[in-house]
Length: 122
Image (cartoon, rainbow, N blue to C red):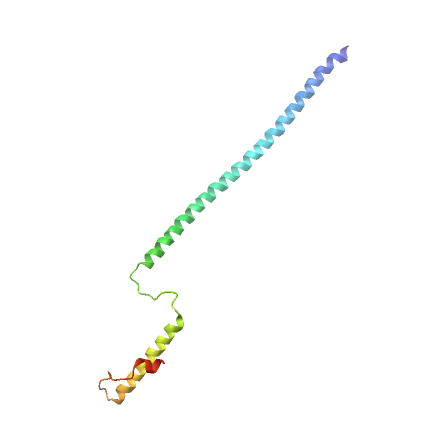
């Protein structure tokens, strides 16, 4: 009957060894998951800080844009047709040239009776 008494001890030892192996494996997986969670948490904190910095920078730029739009600058609107601007400059230059020619013809007398602006900018 001796082998009968030894078998519960062997079975108990085997059960204890398997239990320890499963416990050790579960502990390793838990530590691995904890490390991944820590890495994700650190990355999340970095992204929060970066997003906060970008939000502050965008707000500052918006304020600067608002300030520049409300300044006393008399710049022409950005959507102005460039051809109209070029035509006006060309016509103004032609008008000045015509007025100068007429002034030379009049020997420096008044040029108020010069050609109308439309005659040169047809």
